[in-house]
Length: 170
Image 1 (cartoon, one colour):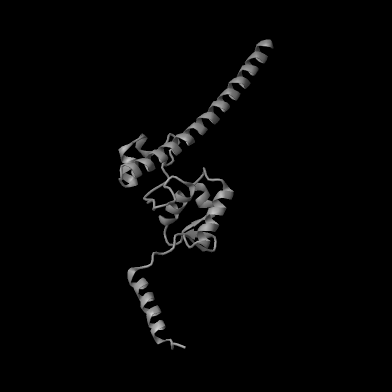
Image 2 (cartoon, rainbow, N blue to C red; image 1 turned 135 degrees about the horizontal axis):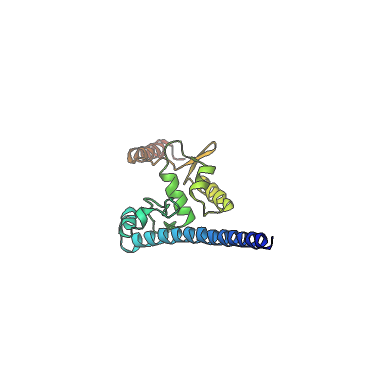
């Protein structure tokens, strides 16, 4: 019976150590994915190459982490004069919405694709982007606004000029 107790204790100890190591491994894999995404974004900025090419310059397991998910959530993002940076949560959110179809993504789908962004941060960014015109909300779905064509923009300017010419000077 003493042998059974010893084996049971050993089994409990092994399971606890395995669980702790698995948690550490998951944390390290997530951190490594973030570092790879940051490296690709910085390579894109410093070497002035498109982000997809920067990812290709630094291949790692076919662009996937050991867990099978995409390591670089940023695709095709461009950084403006002051930003958002390609590897920031808001920049990745903007790039994600820009790559969606006409229906967009639900809040749950966005949270699933950006697991490292805290829910409160995601809510705040989505709210700010909708208010600022960087995103459009249709019911429960979010998408990037449709780009304004050059013809539509010049047509709006022409209409404004005609209204200014037609108004009587008082």
